[in-house]
Length: 79
Image 1: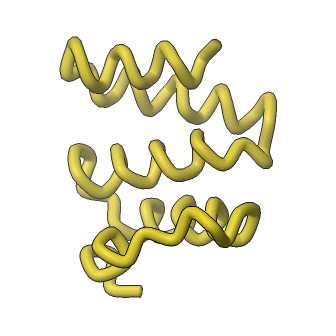
Image 2: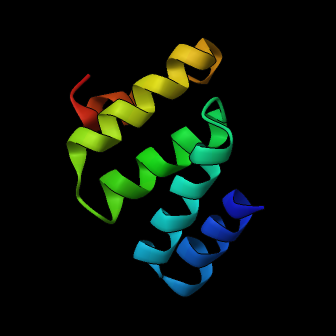
């Protein structure tokens, strides 16, 4: 799947732009994919430095599944 490929690109090849493309594709196909929103938020925050988009995708993940709240990540995002 695109989500797994995005993680491979991010974690093993440091291809952050490529990973972003595949996270976006995953979310186009499945807009309610909680892991994709969460992992895309992490990529955006940690590697692409797009904090506004990171907040959006983290909030979307929490909206879809409140059980995945990550207090440390929320501190980083300023939420």
